[in-house]
Image (tube, rainbow, N blue to C red):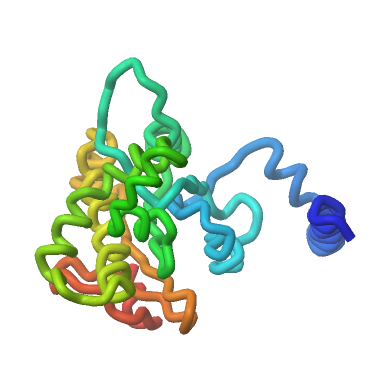
Amino acid sequence: MSAFRKFVNGFLAFQKNSQAADPELFARLSLKQKPPCMVIGCCDSRVDPAILSRAAPGELFIVRNVANLTPPYEPDTHYHSTSAALEFGVTSLEVEYIIVLGHAHCGGVRALLTNDPNIDETHPFISRWMRLAEPARRKTLMVLPDAPVDEQASFCEKEVVKVSLNNLMTFPCIAEGVAVGRLKLRGLYFDLGTGTLFLYKPDKDCFDPIGPDDVGD
């Protein structure tokens, strides 16, 4: 079976099962979407936010890019896909949460850390995009200058989540929403090897395994 046929068959099975469980599901969704959560995730095939959270259609507004990065607010004439999605999610959909979902074994972070000159030549878009995470790379090399690359990568992947959270607050609509309590930001990190989900805790500046008591509101 070809990969494309498998994709289509999976979609048809999903459609059939969903319609059987709720015949009016897609009819309702075609009229309006009102997702409470927006997720900034990585485009890595192993880390699908909807699958990992078992979300139903219409529950998540998802942006996926290399290394789950959020750029800073830059109101210029360039094209800004992630920023456009943030603008729509916050001002039009009025999401209640923005979740940055990082993960282990991120290829973009590994490319950033190794600083391989071949990356610039063969993947110039990735190289330029990952410059957004330069603060994470610098901190990693400052804290763990002599550590093995795997340890540095794990540390840096978490720092990238923090970079994205900080950049989110440069958007006026997000900063205002957070200030009045209308919007909440959360940072998560998924360890592919163990299946553990970590929550970033700003008060302690660390990532701890998440449990039911950590969810709060």
